[in-house]
Length: 88
Length: 88
Image (cartoon, rainbow over all chains, first blue to last red):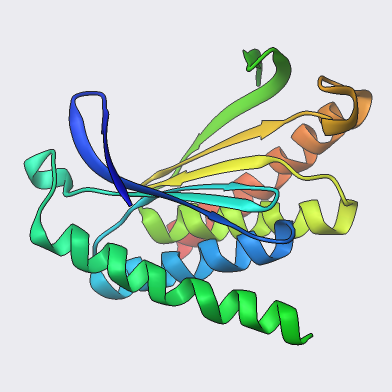
């Protein structure tokens, strides 16, 4: 994760790599479901073989402790998808 | 849809609005499934209440007739999601 500034708002950004479009989309879906559960929503750019995630706290237009927690939870969703693909 | 240039590549771009994150994510999932069916893959930016879609043909680094067809098919996925939300 790195801290970036977009439109004057500090955000956490990380890009994840995948072997194809379907696995990237699956990751987006899982991060999206996590976001709904936690009622905290990132921006997600889904591309062939790549998903970029941005976390920030809309209310304060910047970073809050919760964003770092969400970033760690996002990381935890990545390895299981890669593992499923290696095994299948 | 409008034609934009990103990194020297012409693309079709359209932003769709939604009432919340869940409906935006659902649209991303449906466009993603269409992409897999057609073996032609867009970039999709999923945000709270908004999805931006870019279509282009990777092989020719620009626009092909098929991108315009995919854009029309993407449009056809939008109204059903809004309708489901109004009715529920």
